[in-house]
Image 1 (cartoon, rainbow, N blue to C red):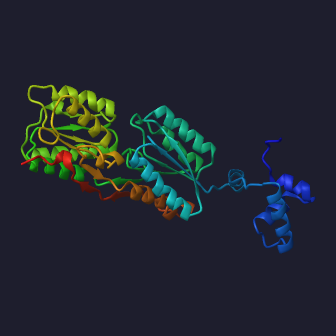
Image 2 (image 1 turned 120 degrees about the horizontal axis):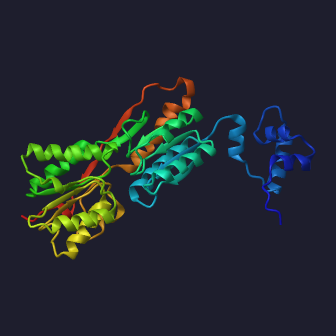
Image 3 (image 1 turned 180 degrees about the vertical axis):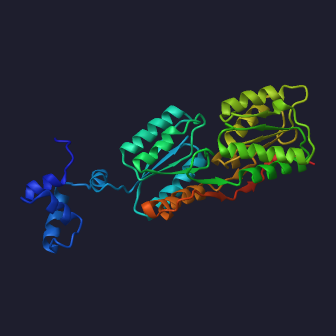
Length: 342
């Protein structure tokens, strides 16, 4: 049995018509009579013809396809953001191609190359932990592909950006921990060259300074994004003679690593150790103790990132010249892990 995909050329051959005539009939062109349109569509159905949108986009020099690149698709934050993007794309009759970088700059570059070859109209990206060089993203301009950064953004890269109120919410979380009676708070951050992690650290430091707390330098650790790294660092810090009595992390996966280490060391959470994370991952509310976290409204972030393309960038020459930075307000979810017993 032939596995060759049926094209308009096959339909044209079957019906003794030109491919261009078949194309016009399939696309309901007014120059083709209703009777002919019906007969062409009937033949297309018999032959199991499916419209090749990529080929059509290449012929027309335009695309109704959006590319999205995220570090991981199996994390609730990113899967919810993708759901928001998909919802807006569906409303605007666009399809979506999803790639993941696995926190690798090399993988991210390959994903960009794949999406360029797919002739996407726009790429929405949350950059990998390794990404510092932006040449692969700046090069999109030469391919007439628009770019929107969301959540994890590079400050030096000119594009529309959609982020949370990272500095303010981190400041508020730190004040909550201090208000609960925690005073030796450790901070586990992400890569400091990425804007959202940079601002979360700034919010933490602002609250620490305002409350005149003295935090040892080694209680503040950047680039500890993975659960494994967070676990190693937490075990080291909790083994000190004077260990931290709380952790603020920039992801729930870090918080999970800290909680597992504390449990293995017989440290009670939240009695002896408070923990507060970010992203409100699915597991945060169901484990024991439940993890306090920041709800970043990830689906809303995805919807807003996609909407920016349709509102401003899809207009081509008429699009807005200046780039915007849009802020999505976060919510604090206070659960057991940060509620110190009185």
